[in-house]
Image: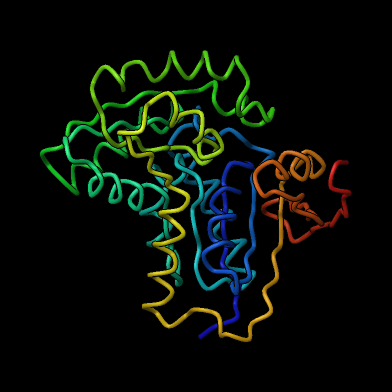
Length: 279
């Protein structure tokens, strides 16, 4: 057993859905969440740039003595997971394989939909992961770039979000998918709306929840789970704009993640800002 924290990182705020899933499933675990808000989004950046950013974050988290690292970013998982695993002395878990595994198990028709950012979809990472699970699958993918800003506005049920979602998901309905992977960590916030659009026969695969389950399996198998009497501590790190991180993060976590520390990657200097929930 180990009381060391679990490191979680994302290009920004969306990975807080993964942090929340981990908190709900593993309430005794301490966590350190780092959102690279100074350099978000990762999607339009080159694979090598994403790998470089991800290596910097891994090195910082390892310096905090984490016992495992969760890459709570689909783009970073697609481009950097293998590189990070080759560099890390602790387990590194991505968000793509757990979601793909769950979708492959859930479908009965063999038709699986994947929605994500443009960068994630263009990487083909979900298609490859799904076809590794089941070579007979038909995978239909759709980039949904407008979902992220809509979620960060808190427009989970807004008529504009409904219209955008209807447009994006038309191809999925036409193809008759019966499992839909929410391939961006923002998208679980839209699950009720997406579920109504797709209908009750389509199972929504929440990659955040599946990643938390995979983390539980990995640390359990390695004997790294927190002891029953652990007193968990959660730390929240941003690389820029701590106030916005706390404000938007409250939409994802149910309460503001505060205090928010600010770290400049590549330096040892770090400051902390204590923020009011709605500041």
